[in-house]
Image (cartoon, rainbow, N blue to C red; front, side, top):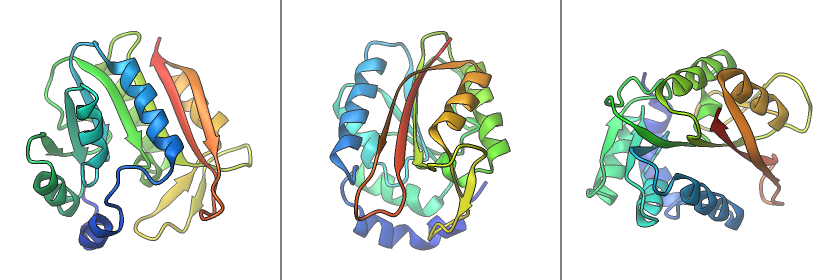
Length: 201
């Protein structure tokens, strides 16, 4: 899988978003996720790691992190900015992730670029790779309207917004039970945003 849109925008993206989080609530959610993952055997996966800033933040919180991204351009920046951490070319299927225990999985605003059926399939693949209790945290642009995901005009690549209940359903169908969610809004952003944390049952 490739991401030509992100490859083309990688330099601008790295310059525009030097901080791992745009809103304070995102930093708090990542900290709560890191607490869930702390002490668990294996690596924490950052799926759609982009320029690697969040992976570096999680590593600073004591996690053994592996960043995964399908964009060669974004990975170039991740490896330049954070040479001390491993990054691999791959996607949400985790096909490029070596065998071994997975402590936790994070996917921040990356699954939005997969068609809904592919998201369902990827989450099921996650379930096959982790043990009961493993935490996952997914962040996404949200919809206020119940029902199936809605396509929207993302500036870089095709994307879908999910109602939080619908994403929680997808997680539940794959074998993950929701623990908490955060839905937040900012006047400078056109959509609500959501973060859902769940555990493998």
